[in-house]
Image (tube, rainbow, N blue to C red):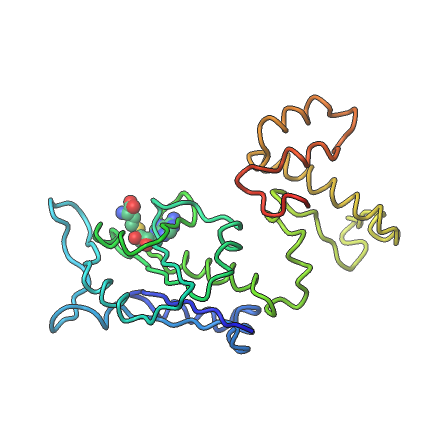
Length: 260
Ligand code: SAH
């Protein structure tokens, strides 16, 4: 089995201690399915004080990461054949499940984490892709980097106990996943839907598919293409949760398994 190498360029390597205590990810580390190599930006700092940041040209608040330490840290990394470099920035493309799946074929991902006001603009040319964790600003790229390590690792063969659990889950099929229940059957008066204890697998699958669509419509109809959504609304009542809707879900940005 191949192992997957994450190389993280960061000013706060200690932030990544968390992954040593994180279930599936920790097991993947122990089984050598992944390596997480931390490259401390401070080691590449300039001068006696190992300076990594400086004031922005033109004035303004905050400090900016200097380009040389990031370049030198980057240069020190031994590149694998199938390697990509990701720059963490709120100005990047918002991370999607589809991206994680696309990268899971690589041997190596190099992640550059910014801090403070960000990094010198000239660092951008190192990156194959600029990635944002979402439309908000964090204080550093470490949390987004950990999100990528976490989300990608669980897609690697041998990582999850049951690989089937990847198939239905939210965002894999442009749909949110159906609701889950476990014991007890009755919790504070709230009962598990009867169909789930019926033993009828066809009915259970149908119920799950319906709930999945229903939930996506209510919570994230942006995941569905407008045209198909309109069509769904037109047919609502006639053929509730028809397979027609599923066809429409395809070909938007989120479809990973179009033939689901
Ligand atoms: N002034 C910058 C933001 C700096 S935040 C701007 O407006 O674009 C400091 C660092 O945190 C960034 O360089 C980036 O590496 C990281 N960061 C903050 N928010 C992020 C997000 N939503 N996604 C990915 N990285 C983020």
